Image 1 (cartoon, helix red, strand yellow):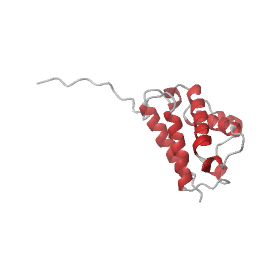
Image 2 (cartoon, one colour):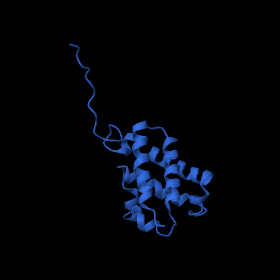
Image 3 (cartoon, one colour):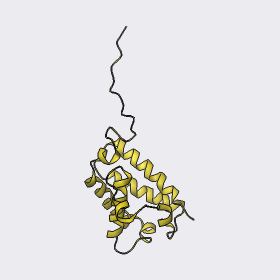
Image 4 (cartoon, one colour):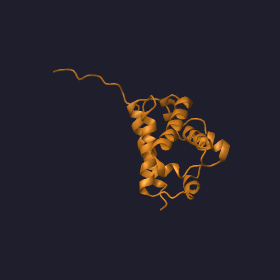
Length: 139
Protein backbone atom coordinates (compact mmCIF):
# COMPACT_ATOMS: atom_id res chain seq x y z
CA UNK A 1 0.00 0.00 0.00
CA UNK A 2 1.45 3.34 -1.05
CA UNK A 3 1.69 6.12 1.48
CA UNK A 4 -0.35 9.22 0.82
CA UNK A 5 1.68 12.41 0.56
CA UNK A 6 1.61 14.78 3.48
CA UNK A 7 0.22 18.11 2.45
CA UNK A 8 0.65 21.51 3.99
CA UNK A 9 -2.35 22.56 6.06
CA UNK A 10 -4.31 25.37 4.50
CA UNK A 11 -4.61 28.65 6.32
CA UNK A 12 -8.37 28.84 6.07
CA UNK A 13 -8.01 32.40 4.79
CA UNK A 14 -9.26 33.01 1.27
CA UNK A 15 -6.52 35.58 0.51
CA UNK A 16 -3.49 33.53 1.57
CA UNK A 17 -1.49 32.82 4.70
CA UNK A 18 -1.04 36.23 6.32
CA UNK A 19 -3.34 37.40 9.08
CA UNK A 20 -4.98 40.07 6.87
CA UNK A 21 -5.21 40.83 3.16
CA UNK A 22 -3.25 44.02 3.90
CA UNK A 23 -0.32 41.99 5.21
CA UNK A 24 -0.71 39.37 2.47
CA UNK A 25 -0.21 41.87 -0.34
CA UNK A 26 2.66 43.75 1.28
CA UNK A 27 1.01 46.58 3.18
CA UNK A 28 0.69 50.26 2.48
CA UNK A 29 2.95 50.44 -0.56
CA UNK A 30 0.81 47.93 -2.44
CA UNK A 31 -2.48 49.47 -1.29
CA UNK A 32 -1.30 52.86 -2.53
CA UNK A 33 -0.21 51.32 -5.84
CA UNK A 34 -3.69 49.80 -6.31
CA UNK A 35 -5.39 53.15 -5.64
CA UNK A 36 -3.08 54.99 -8.03
CA UNK A 37 -3.42 52.36 -10.76
CA UNK A 38 -7.21 52.35 -10.39
CA UNK A 39 -7.53 56.07 -11.03
CA UNK A 40 -4.95 55.94 -13.84
CA UNK A 41 -7.07 53.26 -15.53
CA UNK A 42 -10.26 55.27 -15.09
CA UNK A 43 -8.63 58.36 -16.55
CA UNK A 44 -7.31 56.40 -19.54
CA UNK A 45 -10.18 54.01 -20.24
CA UNK A 46 -13.48 54.92 -18.59
CA UNK A 47 -15.22 58.12 -19.66
CA UNK A 48 -18.33 57.05 -17.72
CA UNK A 49 -16.51 56.84 -14.39
CA UNK A 50 -14.21 59.78 -15.18
CA UNK A 51 -17.27 62.01 -15.62
CA UNK A 52 -18.23 61.32 -11.99
CA UNK A 53 -14.88 62.53 -10.65
CA UNK A 54 -13.48 66.00 -10.01
CA UNK A 55 -10.93 67.34 -12.47
CA UNK A 56 -8.20 66.79 -9.90
CA UNK A 57 -8.42 63.19 -8.70
CA UNK A 58 -5.75 63.52 -6.00
CA UNK A 59 -8.35 63.65 -3.22
CA UNK A 60 -10.22 60.67 -4.64
CA UNK A 61 -6.98 58.71 -4.88
CA UNK A 62 -6.13 59.53 -1.26
CA UNK A 63 -9.59 58.53 -0.01
CA UNK A 64 -9.49 55.22 -1.87
CA UNK A 65 -6.04 54.49 -0.46
CA UNK A 66 -7.29 55.31 3.04
CA UNK A 67 -10.43 53.21 2.63
CA UNK A 68 -8.63 50.18 1.17
CA UNK A 69 -6.04 50.28 3.95
CA UNK A 70 -8.64 49.79 6.67
CA UNK A 71 -10.90 47.53 4.60
CA UNK A 72 -7.97 45.15 4.03
CA UNK A 73 -7.11 44.99 7.72
CA UNK A 74 -4.43 47.66 7.82
CA UNK A 75 -4.50 51.02 9.58
CA UNK A 76 -8.03 52.53 9.59
CA UNK A 77 -6.89 55.67 7.79
CA UNK A 78 -10.28 56.55 6.33
CA UNK A 79 -12.06 56.23 9.66
CA UNK A 80 -9.44 58.40 11.33
CA UNK A 81 -9.67 61.14 8.70
CA UNK A 82 -13.34 61.06 7.69
CA UNK A 83 -15.32 58.86 10.08
CA UNK A 84 -17.43 55.88 9.02
CA UNK A 85 -17.18 55.25 5.26
CA UNK A 86 -20.98 55.08 4.74
CA UNK A 87 -20.32 53.92 1.20
CA UNK A 88 -23.91 53.90 -0.03
CA UNK A 89 -24.63 57.34 1.41
CA UNK A 90 -21.42 58.86 0.03
CA UNK A 91 -22.18 57.50 -3.44
CA UNK A 92 -25.83 58.68 -3.64
CA UNK A 93 -24.94 61.79 -5.69
CA UNK A 94 -23.47 59.61 -8.45
CA UNK A 95 -25.68 57.84 -11.01
CA UNK A 96 -24.54 54.26 -10.47
CA UNK A 97 -26.35 51.72 -12.59
CA UNK A 98 -25.33 48.11 -13.26
CA UNK A 99 -23.07 49.10 -16.14
CA UNK A 100 -21.22 51.71 -14.05
CA UNK A 101 -20.77 49.25 -11.17
CA UNK A 102 -19.42 46.61 -13.56
CA UNK A 103 -17.09 49.20 -15.11
CA UNK A 104 -15.81 50.17 -11.66
CA UNK A 105 -15.22 46.51 -10.82
CA UNK A 106 -13.38 45.95 -14.13
CA UNK A 107 -11.10 48.92 -13.49
CA UNK A 108 -10.43 47.70 -9.93
CA UNK A 109 -9.62 44.15 -11.04
CA UNK A 110 -7.26 45.59 -13.66
CA UNK A 111 -5.59 47.78 -11.00
CA UNK A 112 -5.17 44.78 -8.70
CA UNK A 113 -3.68 42.76 -11.56
CA UNK A 114 -1.16 45.54 -12.21
CA UNK A 115 0.57 45.16 -8.84
CA UNK A 116 2.66 42.28 -7.54
CA UNK A 117 0.66 39.87 -5.37
CA UNK A 118 -0.33 36.22 -5.34
CA UNK A 119 -3.10 35.03 -7.63
CA UNK A 120 -5.04 33.93 -4.56
CA UNK A 121 -4.93 37.40 -2.98
CA UNK A 122 -5.76 39.08 -6.30
CA UNK A 123 -8.75 36.80 -6.85
CA UNK A 124 -10.02 37.42 -3.32
CA UNK A 125 -9.68 41.21 -3.57
CA UNK A 126 -11.17 41.34 -7.05
CA UNK A 127 -14.18 39.29 -6.03
CA UNK A 128 -14.84 41.15 -2.79
CA UNK A 129 -14.50 44.60 -4.33
CA UNK A 130 -16.61 43.62 -7.34
CA UNK A 131 -19.36 42.54 -4.97
CA UNK A 132 -19.02 45.83 -3.05
CA UNK A 133 -19.43 47.78 -6.30
CA UNK A 134 -22.72 46.05 -6.99
CA UNK A 135 -24.08 47.13 -3.59
CA UNK A 136 -23.66 50.77 -4.64
CA UNK A 137 -26.10 50.58 -7.55
CA UNK A 138 -28.64 53.36 -7.03
CA UNK A 139 -30.32 53.74 -10.44
